Structures are given as C-alpha cells and as structure tokens.
Amino acid sequence: MTLHAESPSGTPRLNVHEGVATLTLDRPAHRNRLEDSDLHALMAHFARIDADPAIRVAVLTANTAGQPRPVFCAGYHIGDFEGKTHDPGLFERLADTLASLRPVTVCALNGSVYGGATDLAIACDLRIGLAATELRMPATALGLHYYPGGLQRYVAAFGVQGAKRAFLTARPFSAQKLLHMGLFEELAPDAAAFDAALARLLADIVALAPLAAQATKRSLAEIAAGKPDLPAMRAREALTAGSRDFAEGRLAFREKRRARFTGA
View 1: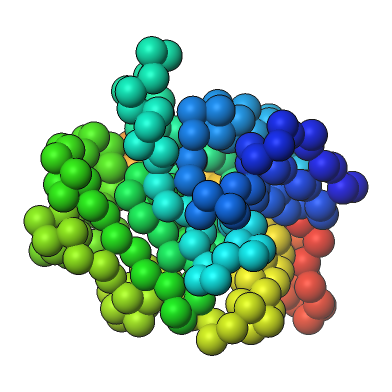
View 2 (view 1 turned 30 degrees about the vertical axis):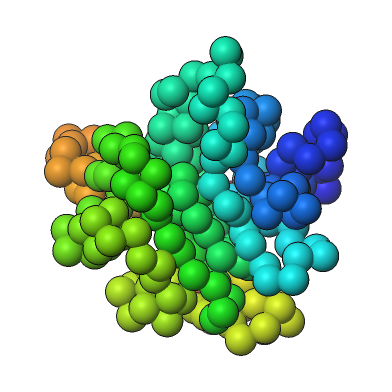
C-alpha cells in the first residue's frame, strides 16, 4: 500500500510504501529550515507512523532540489524564536518523540545539517550521508544553552569529548569524521550512490522480524539512557521467543529461504 499524506506547501511530506514511511523536509529554497508549522506537522506524522503497525522503518530526509550545495536542514528558523506563539519546549519534544518512535528510524542525510536539525539526525537510530556534507552545532555561537534532551543525545552519540567539540567550538564536523566516530552507517560519493545505499539499508531493516527489532530498540534505548528495565527486557525476550516470527525465522533458516515475518 502506498500512502501520500497531504501537507500545506512547504511543510514536511509523509509517504508510506511497503512498510517504509518516508518523511521529507520540503523548504529547499530556504535550506529546509524548520518553522513552527513544520514542527507541528512532523509531530502529527510521527503519531500517524506510530499508530500504523505495518510500518517497519521510518526515514527522515529532505528535498534539496535547486540548491547549489545540498542542505538537509539549516535548523530552526531563528525568526520564530520571537513569535508570540513560540513554544520553547516544542523542538525538544519533537526530537524526543522521534527518538522514541516504535519503528526503526533512519536519517537519510542528503545534505549538510545545522543547529537543532542535528539533534533530529542524532535522534534517529541509523544514518547514511553524502560524503560532501557537514554537521555544525552553533548554539553557543548564538548565545544559547541547548536543551537537556539534545545535550544527552549528543553525549550518547559523540561521547563527552565529541559533544564538547561540537558545543564549545561550534566548528563543523566533516562527514568523514562522523563516519570515523561511528555516526554513519555508510557515506556515498554522489546522489545515485546515496539512493542505492539507502535502498540496501532499508531492505535489510524491512527484512528483520519487526516484533524483535522494535522490542530490542526499546531495550537498547533504556540501556543507553542508563535506565535498564530488566523485568521489561525479560518480558520482551519471552514475548519474542514465543512468537510466530521466531518460529518462522527458525523454519526459514532450516529451509534456507528468506523469512516471511508478520510481526506476531
């Protein structure tokens, strides 16, 4: 089934096809900056994704058409900080929600990423990127102490020293440096190679047993946050051990064929 969610001009688009939900940032003329309307649209898309058990993986990417140098996202629109309806906690809630989505999440970083959008990239479970892209966190250069959830994600992903470099120098990270730090699954030299790398990664994720993958994602998140829930992990282990998916996985292994998982 293919689903195209209608969105007002410029707000992120949602497409669902064969278990993959693709969210596309869609303000290429403004380097895909995020405005308050985009944050609300993304929250609505996240809720839709979490409510659909057929979705096994969610991809966050961007429309970079017409840009002389691809920019995935320039970050939050600074002008919205001064708006009367500005909600200072909305961006943090958005990133937290992305990090806790039920399906596996992939950031398809098809351009450079700046500011708050770096947290969205880090909040995803996996990332692939273009070799010419960079990541930069300018919060302190703008006079801002970043929100706690983002700082925690930076430390978890970059380590304390890497997070210090990001926030206390505001210097950019090259894609090659991020690959060396383990932030990228793969770097692609051009758009064609990028699309092929993304297709391979998505095929591998969609082929996993969704019940086991999603349960394992929750357990790993708890461990990363320093809050392992051992009884819950044991319950997830028992649930998957008794699942039809595990029975199918064993049968497929014996029959030397690809497993047909149903998520049950």
